[in-house]
Length: 180
Image 1 (cartoon, helix red, strand yellow):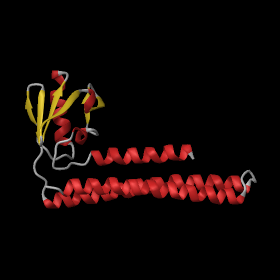
Image 2 (image 1 turned 180 degrees about the horizontal axis):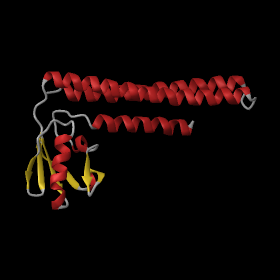
Image 3 (image 1 turned 45 degrees about the vertical axis):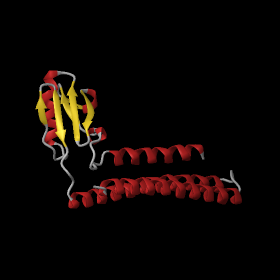
């Protein structure tokens, strides 16, 4: 059960990190967490070549550590799916986040729901694996049938609990996106 809880906790953490990368009305450094920059020929996460701060509500400021990397960071932002034009000033790059339109907000909510469904599927796969292990133990006479049924019920309760947590996380994110 401990291993099962750990695996489910990891699914929750994965969902949280996916949800954090969604753009809301406010600037958030996690928006750039998946951005890769070509650093001397190899793809490198942005956070390894620059510092990202939020000086204003809708502005991200990227301070590049190495002057020679400014063009690469600028290029990575422009070719990304962020849809934001960077403003370069020396070793500092500013990203002004425009207001989200109603259509864009709805699209983001749809994406949140898709990510939520993927996370639920991974949680159900974890449950399925655990139940299959119990059934194998029961068949091999390593575990009594009534004990196996009790453990399966416990696994289902744990799964329901974590699905509830995931639903609440997604609901909070949807509210955040739809709030002007």
